[in-house]
Length: 250
Image (cartoon, rainbow, N blue to C red; front, side):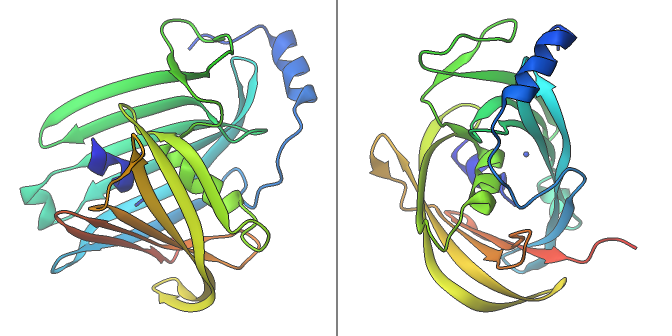
């Protein structure tokens, strides 16, 4: 499950319509650089494999979920041949992130890994809040992101004014502390999608106040209006995964 936290970067009943309308009107949303309909595609390298996997990140929609105005993010990750013959993986992650606070309201994992299929939908409720969703909820600290929504939080941050961003992150099973710092600005980055100027964001992962030193994450966020993540890199005990932005399909 610890590695799921990072591979994720490279993953119901409706309320009454009147309640949804009032809730949507009352939200004071944070300005964000992404938009509904955005799709980004990445090529993942690992060890000697230049095309070990593919990752697609998308902003699927804006919608009201149980009275919350949310962004619906989706990540799809698949291993490619020849890696898929050894490690067949076809995973999908869905995040419903609050449009005002950017904290997670619902996190879904739909996994097909090494022939084992599992699906999970979890509702997150901050301590002191009342759940609006049916069934059991996961109680978390206020401001908790899920692992996919955390990436979009990094994009939404103003790294010129806020060089640090700390937040609890839920990966579907465990809670981690994400401590992100801007380590450099104005780096020239070349990926298959083109040439970019980007800020390098370093992410350290902690659990129970202890740093997980075997894991390190870095994200290169372009200085364009969309704050496009052009490179996602995760150093893990089994090697380094590097996802680079590729051109949109024609």
